[in-house]
Every structure is written in C-alpha cells, then in structure tokens.
Length: 375
Image (cartoon, rainbow, N blue to C red; front, side, top):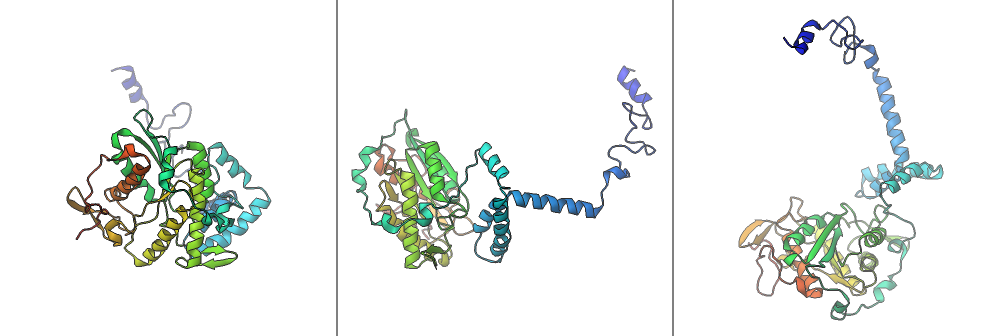
C-alpha cells in the first residue's frame, strides 16, 4: 500500500481536515452544510437586498434607461419606462451621480452616442438646396485600389448591415477590398435621442478614415419627427423632407465633404405593406438627399430587386432559395448576396478595378435588376 492509500484509509469522515471539522461530519456542520444557519437568510432580507441593488443600478444607469426607452416603439411600455427614467435621470444629473458611469465608459472606450444641439436634430433644410457635382466629376479624386493597397470599405447602419457586409467579403474581387462591418442594431435617423448618427459618424470616421462607406439603414425609422415644434408622421411630405435633411447631414459627415464616397442603401421591400409605405417615402428622401452631398450615392434595392415586389425567395446560380428572414424585412445569409452585389456594382463605378466580383452568380435579366422570387 502506498502512502496516499494509507492516508485515505486512516482518514474517516468524522476526522478534521486541516484543523477544521470535516464538512461531511453531521456533528460538526461545515461549509456547504444546508443546516448551517450562517448560510441561510430570511426571504424578506433577500428581497430588500435585491431592491437596493436594482435602485443603485438604476441611479447610476438612468441615462441609459432613458436612451433605451426612447429607442422603443411608441406604446405603453415606452411610456412607463420614460415616465420613470426621465425624472430619475434629471435627479442623478443634478447630483452628478452619472459621473462614475461616464468615467467607466471613457476608461473602456465607450464614447457617448448622443449630444445636444447637433445639426441632425436642429439643422436647416438649406443643406438640401445645394447641388453636388455629378459622380463622373468626382471619381478621379479617389485613389484606386490595388492588391498592395486594397480599398478600405466600412459597412455600417442597422442590423441589415451585418449580412450585406459579409456578402461584400464573399464578393471581394481579387482581394482588392478590406471590409469592416459595424452594425448598430435598432438604431434610426428619426430617434437621435436614443442614438445620434451624426455623432457616431464623426467618431467612426475619425477612428477609421476608410476609403468608402456603405450605409444600410431605415428598417427602424417608423417614428414621428419634430419640425419647428410640430410632429409629423412617416409618409407625410413634411416627414419626407425632414428625413432627407437628416440623411444629408449624416451622409456629409460620413463623406468628409467629398473625401470618400458613401453608398446609402435604404430598406428593401417588406412583406407588410404598412412598412412599404414608409420605405417608399424613405427611398424618395434618400434619392433627394444624395443630390446635395458630395460623394453620396443612392443604391436602390427597393425598386430594383424583383421590380419592387416582395418575395421570400431568390434565385442564385440557377437554384431558388429562401432569401428573407421570418420577419419579412431582413435578408438572410444567401439573400444578402443580392444587395451586396448591387453595392459592389455601385462601388465599381467609382473604383473600376472592382468590376467582376468573384461571388455566386445572381440570376438577372439582361441589363436588368436581380430577381427575387421569380415565381
């Protein structure tokens, strides 16, 4: 018998270990024994501790609660969250109890995505009266990509950006692009109190300085907008003009005054016609906005894919596949190849070396748009 087996044989469950009673000894309750009163706590005391912890978390995160509430769709839940969080945020701001959270955000590189007095919120429609130079006169100013110096493409926007960004990676012709995608899920131009895209665009361009930007946004833009103290609903002429103004503000920030091209991609058709009414208005607004911003391009996937008719299916390489997610709005992984190829075609007009992506072949009529659901 070796030494370890000899020690195990001599050590019973009733002997102390390391000078402390064995945890298995019923006569000497130890760590882990459910009968040990030191390990139990009255339910009321537990509840009190939980309530205090929640209150402390709410106090130090009141601003985040407000932003979360403002990001919700109009309704009872949003009203309740804002009715609680806004007064709390006012108090914590006055007492400067939000400073620790702001300090942690700075330490961990989490810059604020909201600000007061931004052009996105308070600017003038004068920006829409400007006329940008035709695209053909802008192209020579941008360096053309090579394998040694690929084009840095920054893909951003709402959740639609994720899979389209992956599609661009798949289509990357001869390694001439380096694609980075940062999607901001749930964001919109019509709700800058929750997430201000002008602020975010300034931060992203300063941090990355890409050669081109692809912006896919609009699926969440069903909020009313305020113009001169009056609210306007989506689809109204006033809403459309204000949305065009906001697109122009963000597109100009992304382009750096024409330093780089920006390919703005509003939503595609949706299964629900209620959304389509909003998306049609958005597309008209974007088309109007890009005409006033140097370097901005409108990539129309609403009217061109399947000639503006919604379908769940898409044909790729001669086979019909499911192209949309169950929500009837987002593309799935395969379906996202359609808008990705359309974006690549728009990029190739400014960067001719990108012509002829290497991804899957989309079924398209001669000189026509990609076909979704050719039933």
